[in-house]
Image (cartoon, rainbow over all chains, first blue to last red):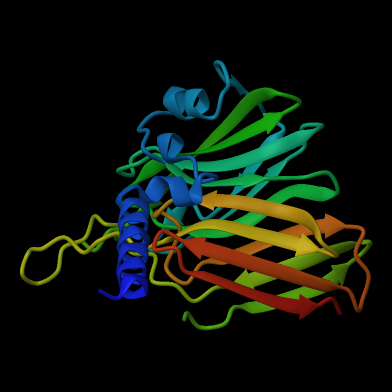
Length: 152
Length: 103
């Protein structure tokens, strides 16, 4: 009996098991992706998933976007926060299947200003959620969509 | 491996403005193909931008970000000649890193 061959077979079996186990729980591989927050449907749930209490409306947050989006698959947004110590900026689309579209962490030295493009399934209000100095604030805006962005 | 990103980093006053265009399907997992089978979700989950080893922006994205995502942001403390590095990771575990020089 060739014992080194036995050893090798056992070794590779263990390795295979480990890989399978790893694949069975994909969440653990990307621990910094907040799955709970991306599964939510409402603003209070998002805030809760991000670890905050009730958000306050603020006029120091501005959302720049077209009022009417012809193509819901690509709607450009610019979110700017004038709140001091802004740490986080998130874009929420109220009537999308999952409300949270994107969440940006703003470290010191980076302007609380982001510009990106998101999909909108239908006409909906868009909420910019900002975390500043440990508290949550938001501003919202209605954007009309004439052609949905979810494949129709 | 995914296609390279297009990154532009330019000085805007005393700040650096970074514009990134990534090549990615950003499939939502909501759509169905011609046979009625759901097309599985495939989207970028994490994006990190660094300047001289310091993180200047990190983002978590859901499938609602548009196909071939565009992102723009501004940070201070950069100067022409410095490098800005962007990395994304998608929900399949695929990764891509590209860098650009500030002009």
